[in-house]
Image (cartoon, rainbow, N blue to C red; front, side, top):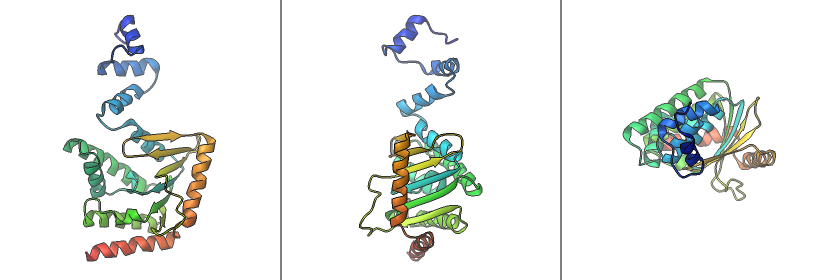
Length: 239
C-alpha cells in the first residue's frame, strides 16, 4: 500500500532516512491518522500553516464556550481583515505575499462565521495594553476596536479589560484559552508566537479556570470595559 520496501520503512523508523513528502498521504491512509503526518511535515519544515494553529481554530469552532485571556493581540477569530494582515505580515516576515494573503483570507472567513454564530459563547479578558498597540497604524487599530465594540454591544462577546495600573495582576504568565465542549474533555491552549500547547489534564484545566476567574475579578466590568474601548476609539478618531 505504501509503495516502500521493508528495509526503507525500517530506516525511517530508526531515523536513518527522512521520509519523502509523497509517502505521507498513503502513510496517513494506512494508519487511519487523517492528515496527521502531512500536518506534521508542514509544521516541522516551516512550510504552510502550523498544525497547532489549525488545532486551536478547529477546537474553538466546535466549542460550546471559550474563555480567553489576551495580552498582545486580539484572537484570530475576532480580527478584522486589515488588523489580521498587519499581524501576519509583520509577525511572520518570512512569508511570501501569497502566503500572507492565504492566512488572512482564512482568518477573515473564521472571524465572519464567529461573528454571525450563536455559539460558542465567548468570554474575553484582555490587558489594557492591547488597546494601545497600533498594529498596522491608527486607522487599522480603530477599525479593529470598532469591530470589538460592536461584538460587545450585541453581547456576542463578554468583554473585560484589566487596567494597566492593576497592582495585583494575575495574568503575568501570558495568554491562554480554556475551551469547553460537550463531547470532549475541557482543554487549555497556551500559545506563543511560534508554538502552541494543548492540555486536558483536569488539574491544569482547573488551575486555568481559577486564573481566569482571578483575571475577571481584577478587570473592569463589561460595561466599563466597553466604555474604555469607546474612549480609545474616540482618541484614535481625533488623531
